[in-house]
Length: 69
Image 1 (cartoon, one colour):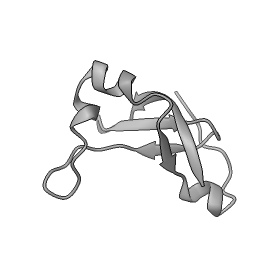
Image 2 (image 1 turned 90 degrees about the vertical axis):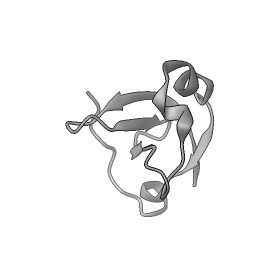
Image 3 (image 1 turned 135 degrees about the vertical axis):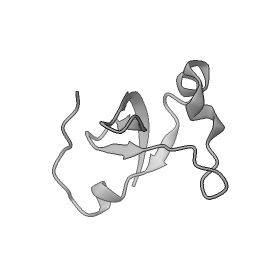
Image 4 (image 1 turned 90 degrees about the horizontal axis):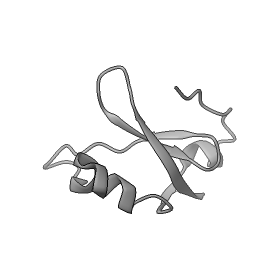
């Protein structure tokens, strides 16, 4: 299910996590060559992606909501 990004936080290892409108969280790592998400490396890039929809597998699985800092 597609859910928009409403914010971000970093996990305990310093990786960026997108906070989705549905109440779930999803890592948005930039880890080339496997995952290329250069936008996550800057504040302006992250801000530009607010509202962008990501596929939320947790919604598809009816998972409970995630905790947020």
